[in-house]
Length: 202
Length: 104
Image 1: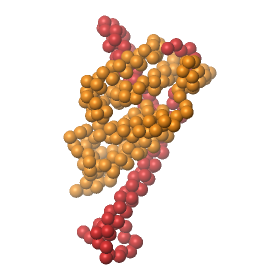
Image 2: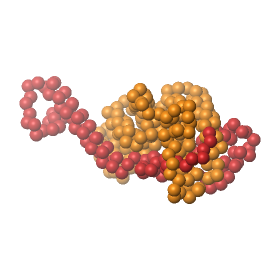
Image 3: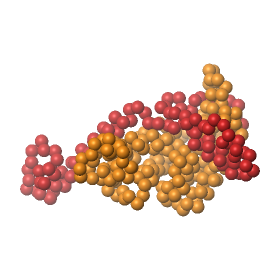
Image 4: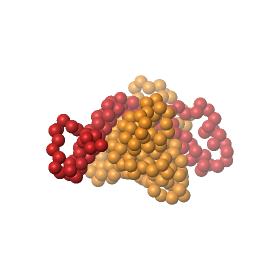
């Protein structure tokens, strides 16, 4: 294959980059990493809620992308394929950690006030900023309380902005099921956060 | 869920950016269109869309490049071993790292 410059590669679609990687153009891998690293990290972080674990999983995802590069076929969008790999890795890791877990969001289910995430520090932030911070925190907590399938569908749709079809491909369930999970997940989030989140800020 | 207690910033040590919500109108419109359940869902969707993007750290690229270099090296060693398995009589100096070139 004719050697392409970084600039030429940079103009290519994700799928063309992958084709170049399949043909031995290592520079294409750098660009794929550059394009997907933050999206993947933002996605995986919703499982781990730990930055270092998320980065490790993103790195593992990219290594698997490279190792499995010849199994990728252009019938699927590259993003769908990569998110499928990331999702599988994140779920496996999440389940492993669940088995080992001695920590939970609720220190005691009977006492909803004793949440480990609810730490006090109200010293310096202006009211509006504080409210936004609280809202984000509430939303993140509510996301963590959803069951795994609901959270995955919701994160892929509302945070990653993927289409229903892509989510269906990534999760391996029918599109109707995807839509149902997303609707139910949104309803649960609404119920969990009530009127508080963003009501004044926005 | 009631809330009266202040919280830490959710991502105090992360390289994250907040996607700003629309300045006005978006959610009010949903509230006014007469479909309470879909309004609520639209609101949730809007909130989630504007959650901060949690990005990788500044050292990520270097770590990834190092891992990728190791991966290529590992892949090359596997190919070399495979080639030597097929051509058992061959003895080559250690200096040659990529045997494929020698047999092309």
